[in-house]
View 1: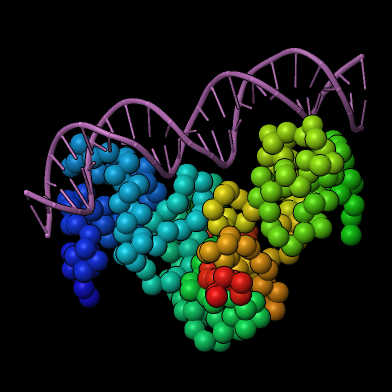
View 2: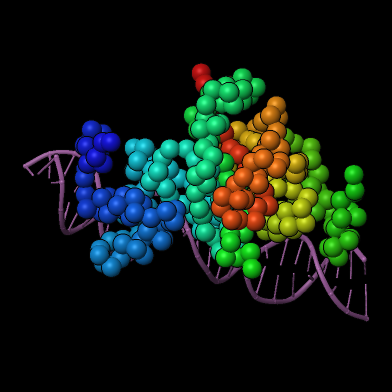
Length: 141
Length: 141
DNA sequence: ATTTCTGCAAATGCTTTGCATTGCA
DNA sequence: TGCAATGCAAAGCATTTGCAGAAAT
């Protein structure tokens, strides 16, 4: 796997401590944080970092393909450094977002379903997102 | 099928012209409009209707189960009066949202997948959303 | 007659923007 | 050194809220 620095340099995007820090956080967690959560986690080690920079950074990393945006839950987009397509579950009570690992969305991303949908709709498809909604174990009483 | 009036009355929610109008628009279209689009479509016949009322109305109708919210695209949530679970395609260029009718998300909503995910994650699941992203026929050149 | 809803305007809150300064390359 | 990125504060917008008047039950 290619190092993040190389990927950025290839695209003529500067490697900064802030960008590395945001990416590092997303690599370490499975919590799918939103911008605010990333910002809070960054604060202790980067007291000067601004929220605007986090917004700009996730945007850059997303466009470069180093992470994916999840349109799930309240409180803005959630971010995931695992870019391989996979389903997510959202807890409607506590707001937690978890991965669904067992069955891969590759089952959709593959020929059968994608081509099927592509043929039906006429769309040139590029990606899929599968979201499950419910209550997590802690919130189900 | 139960009339919308009955459903609202059952829940002690008042039947108003505004609510009927918003619901009627969503029944007539397959465009999955957002609040602003609904508002614009309503304006000619209801010049006094306020945007805030549209926001409140879709919220009520959604909670009562008369429509579903789609978290797709820019420009806020999109609304669909067809509440049977089915996948959607989003055009990343023009913002259009279409239904995917051929294969039903029922394929997921059914025992096999839902129970599978439920067992894996421990979540008590209530719904699913499947979104495809790409370019619509008009935007694919 | 009550109670809820509507419409307006103000308030909120998330996200973006502009720009001077800083810091990669 | 030159160009891009950061940080701050201000601006922008979509959404929500509060409340007086209107409408539904």
